[in-house]
Length: 188
Image (cartoon, rainbow, N blue to C red; front, side, top):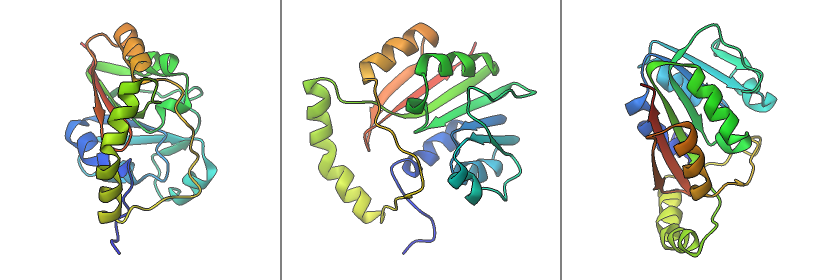
């Protein structure tokens, strides 16, 4: 068994690490694995989460704060703000507006998000990708953390695109494996 855990969110850590830079905020950082990984390649990394079980495992990381994103008031602006499977736990529009306002010019928002299937096309794509997802999960020896809070997404990819077009004009959004979508937006 591999020493490094793997799941559908961790699968996107390389994508996040390719794009993250400068002072980084990881919203819904969980056990801090991504915070630890980014600390080696970014100037400063702050994680915020309000889940006590996740924070207990991350207690050795001084840059993780216990708070909801709604209640988080940093003393600085960020170059990169990340949401990995956390945005659907919040009011998407409000969270994206807040994140946008917390960015320096040239900063970016990165989202590895979940969207609900709402159309026949959504279901067809999910069904077609299911064998790939199952095989990949098996080959990577997927691990599940029973202490992590989960929630079914309420917004469809179309809803998310509409919100992003309104709040983050020019955001790049694409459907991804593991029932995820990737959103990347740069503040100019």
